[in-house]
Length: 182
Image (cartoon, rainbow, N blue to C red):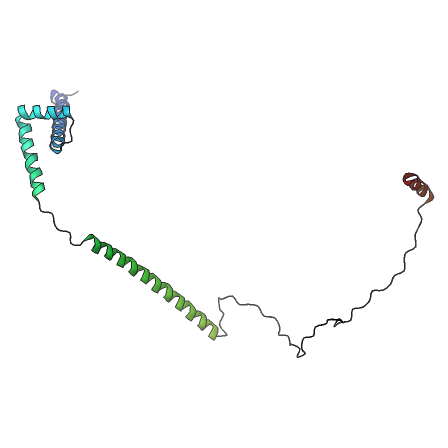
């Protein structure tokens, strides 16, 4: 069960909301009119409201004074020119490159230092891969000889084999083969 007071409450809120919406729309329309951003139909509507509605006239005069006040505000001078700003930006980029070069150079020097130290101490196990080495072979003190007409090492001759004896096939097959080829 609702009371009359509760029943009227939504209608009051709806009316207030409609009034706020109407005022907001009028404010936006008047602001667009002052900025020159209205159509011809909207311009005649605003001029008619300005001629008849005192609230609209007060709002119009306030907006005009606000606009003039904003236009009269001094513009602070730029602390730097665009050229100075770009020079500063590029100098920062160059400093970053220099820092990066120094860091990479320092890392390379440290790597060389560590590898040199690991080579000085032969007993230490190094993480650097090493090449496997086999037993040392003695090199012959003889000079290198090139064989032009004779081989340096005597090549054995192949053994001579006797020819195999021909075995004749059985007679039944022998006759059949003659018939096929003749």
